[in-house]
Image 1 (spheres, rainbow, N blue to C red):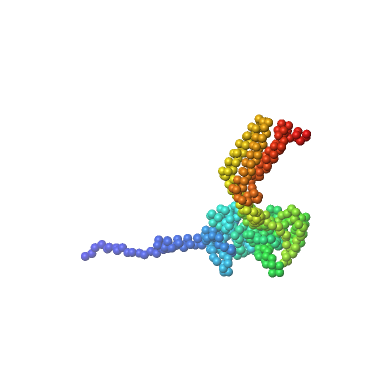
Image 2 (image 1 turned 135 degrees about the horizontal axis):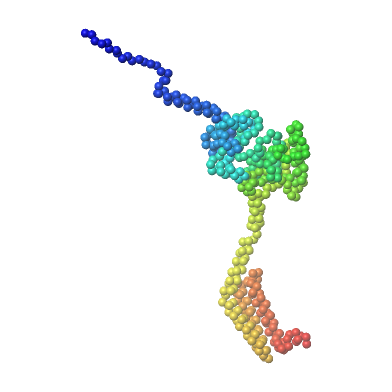
Length: 432
């Protein structure tokens, strides 16, 4: 039996260039990695190493590097240096700033320490330190020495001329890198601060070495030396100024709380001096600092002089006199005697007013008044003690009372001998 022919469906495999959606994820990951790598190659720039004496709170990926206030990099790693005495910070600097990575470029921390002469450091103390980059001259470099404070002078092409200064006593917290000023203008930096003990003399001193920048000294009227040796010209300048009273002095800016620096300025009435030599370096004469340490020392001298005064002994004597006076005023005998004196004086006034021809009652009353005064003194002496009359602190009132008693008794004796004096007066009677 036959019927129509049936066609069978056949499967056919076709190969495509697209590998399938399952490969989309790894392909995207490869592309992203390549793009990030290319971006890192273009933007991340170069890694440099800066050596500091302490980490000062620097943190990887948190502490930034700025140039003129603009972020140009960040800290990628902080580790201990091989010598065990310093800290190495690895910095990623943007490629655009690579031309500034030269041997004269300097890095310093802002916010590592409070510096009142740099208000920005106060803000950095709260938000964490940042590394500031200051471009300088020289060849390309990738290793630098960092500082915990802003360098006093910007990098200069010219040479530095070195000098020494010897200060009497301690130099406080003067540090290497501190500023040197000439009449308020920055002209150099401190390069060395150390202790020195002279075995021959037994003297302990703190010699300080300075580096002055000739380009900052404002020298006019002379061409720069052709050989680059500024020493003769700067020496001549300082020798002349020292003869006119220029001296080196430690100071602080702001006073009392700011960082220490060396200030070169004229001192009125300074003794004559010249540049001297010490270990091959000219020495600039110095004067004592007019700072808090000096004021404290002078205040201590004043306090010692006050302590030498007999203040306690004087106070004890005053208290003794006051006790004696209180004892006298509290004595019942003294109060009774003073009342008798008051009544006697009143009776004398009444008798004189009457001018009685009988002088006897008046004389008797005067003698009674004198007796009362003497009894008052005797009572006071008994109150103060047996030797009260020999004491230097006997109240003046008792001495006056004794003198009054003598005067009243003398008057009574005189009137007893010359009763007519009441009418004629003593001067008239004596003139006759």
